[in-house]
Image: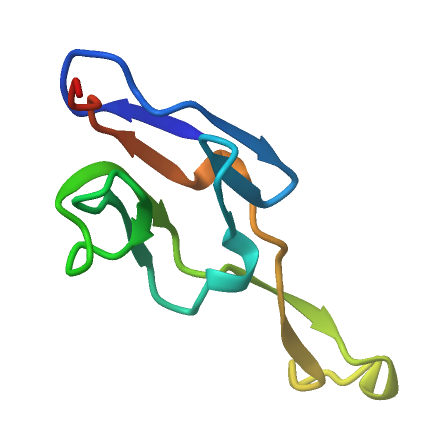
Length: 112
């Protein structure tokens, strides 16, 4: 995972496991389920009560941002069409999400 510190100060604690990220042992997001054919941007904010929310509309201040790159594909030959000289017979197959390509931007936490 690519980590970007947006500003100085303490950041929210987080953990990752496979394709899931958990913020402050509270909010867990499965990034593989959010992956699409276009890049995906997710805002993680704190609301006025300090609770974590997904999306800037519901939040009062930024805590983190997640940028998931567009889904990648590889061509795999169709077993029923093996040996076709015209190049047909292959189908794009999604490559599992590579967490090393995901960018996590962290904002400093406000002091209470």
